[in-house]
Image 1: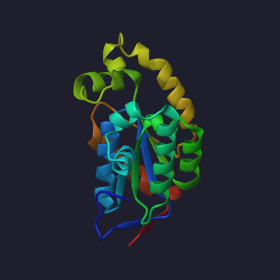
Image 2: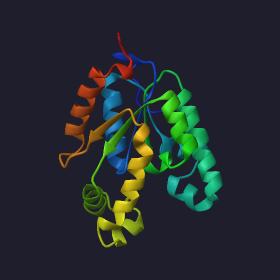
Image 3: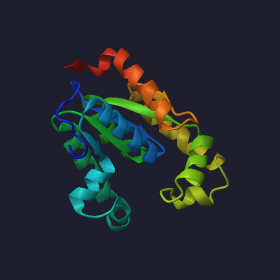
Image 4: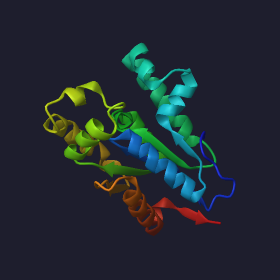
Length: 193
């Protein structure tokens, strides 16, 4: 796994922790902070794809046929999930659209879904992360345009082991909530050093 790695990890994981959510900059920030807190390896699926092909995620999406992009995403995810030592993996919500990716995650990872309301996601993309917001979100008439997408996303995430509410407080309160819940959940299989 690429990214932060402290050779004095506080825990060892039996399975990697995969974190997904609809506002990927916050998912990435929370995942990185969780990995840093425990001294675990950190990797982001989008970054792994970019490194693998030597191009930005945006250019990959525009240059590759949809099937080729999905295959690259699937192969990159499989590689991250099987990497040792196990750590924290972040992925954009579109990565769970493929059934094969959901099966891979469910079989090999402890999956954490960050829950946003459609209103929260719309405000964050519009006000906080306009540089990473898809154009159709900024042009949409508001959060109503996101509701059907959110309903579909929530159905796809039924397999998640843990759901964490992303309030308006940002990453820090969500990180505190996530740490407390991970430490109390036997399914995370933390092995303390």
